[in-house]
Length: 163
Image 1: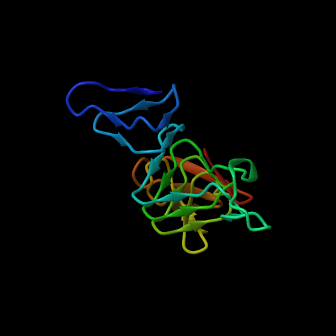
Image 2: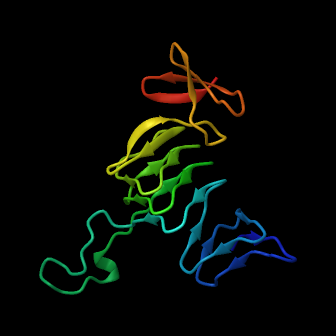
């Protein structure tokens, strides 16, 4: 289990959670029942859903209740610094890229590129965000900049990278 800062307002980690040993859970944080904590700097908003089955069924084709061996769990991968808005739904198997932002209520069924801002049902890229989480402003010729930090980014072939 990962570490939790002690003292007043210490993190509360439910016994049924799975917190990676490398994770540090900050003071005042609650990690709820059956949660898993594994990635750096990821934010998951309230009531967001990360599914774990691409083809969900309660029974087998012959009508028997599914057992553990009848089911193949598949996770969602969240890369460094990404943010998932409240009530967003991420379908099993997708990856959300570094520093990407999934808008509240979005339904993500395809991978989200690094720094992408996606929204809607189904989620589509509607812009780019920087590490500060704010939409980037176009600077011309495939270049973008962050109005908060001044960082510069370059778009090439539908991907974005600092620089």
